[in-house]
Structures are given as C-alpha cells and as structure tokens.
Image (cartoon, rainbow, N blue to C red):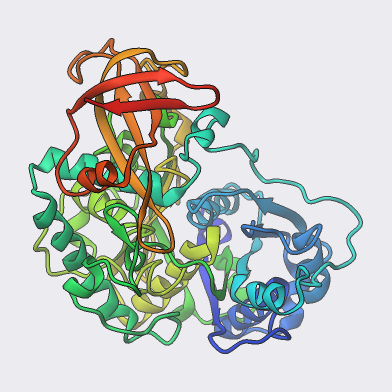
Length: 509
C-alpha cells in the first residue's frame, strides 16, 4: 500500500463565537472560518482547497440554506469536489473519518474536507429581535445529496409518546442504570454531579468551551431556579448545550498527497482503529441500562485494524467519550471496562453540556481537539467515541502521531453488525391493555421546574418474562404522583396500561 494509500488527518479547525448579535456569523460563515483554520493548521494555502475531491457537511439541526455543501464548496473554491450532506446523528463526524480513511486506503479518494456548524445562539437572537427566521439562504442549483440515507431514529408511535426528546430517553436510560446498580435515588444523583464536575474542570481551561466555568458536584446535581430539572434525574447542567455558535472542520488525505501539498510530517495523525455499529429500535432493545451496539463498537475498535490489534483501553492516554448526557458517558466507561475511579479524564473538550455541542457536529470538535492533544503528547494514543440518536448509532476511532505499521485496513462494519441484527427484537405493542410493570421511566419538567408528565416504558406482565410485550405510555397524574416518581425507585412497580384516544396511558396502583 505505502504512502499513496495511507490515510492521515493533516488539518483541523475550530470556531467558538461566544460574543454575538443579530449580525454575527451564519452557519455557513462559521463553517467557512473553520475550513480556513484547518487549512492554516495544515500549513497550506486556501487555494489548495480547489484540489479537494470530496466535501462533506454534517447536517445542522435546522439547515440554514437549501444546499449547504454546494454553498460551502462555492465559497472556498472547491467546486470540483463531490459534495455530500451527512444526515442527523452525532456519530456522523467519526463515521466520516472511518469511511473516507477506507476510501483513501482503497484509492477511491485523495483529499477530503469535513465541516459542520450550528449558529443557534445567533438564530434565536434574530428571531427574538425581528420575529423572522435568519436571512441565511444562499443560491443553490439543486437539493443536497445525502451520503447515507436520512432515516428517522424513532417511530411515529414513539415520538407521539415523547421519545423524540433526547433528554427524556437518556433520563430513562439513566434510571434503568440506577436500578441495575442498586443505587438509592440520592446516591445516584450525587454520582451524576461527581461525574460531570470533572468535565467542567476541562471546560474551564478550554478556549473553545461555551461555558468555561468549573462547577461543583452539588451545583450540577441539585435542581435550582438556574439549574432546573429537564427530564428527571437530569438537571439543566447535565444536558447537551446546542444553543451555541460553534463549528469545526477536518482535512483528511493520504501521506503521499500530503507531501505533494507540502504538509509537514509533524502534522500527520494516523487512525489506528475504527468501528461503526447500529442499535435496534428503541422498543426492540434488550434493555435500557446497556447497549449491545456500544459493546460491539468498543470491542471492534481495538480489533478492526491491523494497527490496533495490540492496543486496548489501558493504552489510551486521552479519551473523549460522547457526552450528551451522563448515561452516555457512564455507559461508555463501563462498556470499555474502566473503573469509576480511573484517574484519566473522560473528555478533552469539557463535553457537550459545557464545551457545547454544535448539534450533530460535536464530535468534529472532539476529533479536532484530539488531534491537537496527541500532537502535543507525541507517541500517545487517543480514543474518541460518537453516538447518534438514542444510543442508535455508534462510532469510534483511535488517533496517534505514531505511524500505522503495514497496510491500513478497515473491516466491513456489516460483518459485525450482523451479530447485532440477528438477535431477536424484544416483543412490543402499540396498544397495551392490562396489568403491567414499569421497566424504566422519567418525569418531564416545565421551565418553572415543576413536573408536567411522566413517561413509562413497561411490560405487559412481569419484567423477567422474555415474552412480555413492551410498550410506552404516559402518566398524566396529579403533581404529587409525579413528584413521588422522582423520590423513590418506581422500576418494578405495577399498574394498568391502556390505549387512550391518542396516547397510551399508565396508571400506578
């Protein structure tokens, strides 16, 4: 294979625009700035971007213009590049590095730019000031082409019952973990604060963090006027922050092409292992306190590249676990076999609640930060994980300045995805009726920090019965009932499930 087909990251760029007004940067402005920062980091001219053969944009939560890949290509002079849009999912940036590293290794690509951004802080300010949407549309000749199919990550039935809300789903996962671990409500809540206080330590030292503020465990874990519950047990400080102005961009090429461009070898970052997996549908999963897709991802990232066969989690000096909510971090830590008291930081950015997360593009920032980290600590290894949807899609990558020995290779993810797909789905029903048991749950809160509604995933029958049908339902009860659900463990509690006019209902006995 040699230098011609050895993939390397050579340039990274990040932008955080904390000071903003109605005339501040648009989404495309931020991406353009990040792309030029990546060029500057690589030590090449902006004119070099004309040689890109592929340009991929990670989709914003609300696309600001008709065809963002085409607009960015026009702005940076990369009109000859094949242009793609990556659909929703926080796994996207790492998936792109994995997929296009393989394309370079196979001789299908030579020089690629990835970019993504959100400007939701400015957008909200514009809407509030003018009552109009941001005037960010730019001329395009056609609609964008998706690199992979853009599919919903939850069903219409699940969405009707609140499972399109990420805080609600991850809070339900958190409660399932708490029950499985045998923790009391109070003990587990403080543990969440202790987990994320270390994230604020990193954010406080970061020039790119949206909230460079260190907070105590109690401050994060305790619900207050300024730190209300969003979905119990998650307070505001435990939730991903996407109301930000942030962007990131990466340049990927081959060693041979990098040298042709005049890029110094000390910029080269090698991908020493990668993996991509998909989880079953929300109601089809085995349980909510672990993820089989994450387990296989963690296993395969150390096995799916000839270079990473001798590496393990103990060799990772730097780690950035996807951190939309505490359950995502804790589940990754446990899945990778790390102890709760492992001294290594689990983030290099400060994480989505404190660094901020540009929607689907946060991992572009964490990869850029990891590139900078391993360049500073030459010879070290860094692990980045990514998660899209509701533990729906997973990706991981291992980064180092150490060259890959031998040929670069990537095992087809379909070969190990089959193991996950072949496991039968848990049976479920959209019209439950009868005696039921709570499998997990959460309580959704309003901005007044008052409980508004309970969401339950349960089984018709006993939890231990593999044939018991699973369902999702709402608890529309008095506030004292919802309050009680936040004060004690309700998993395993019995009640009655029924189909209402529009929504399933669950009544506690």
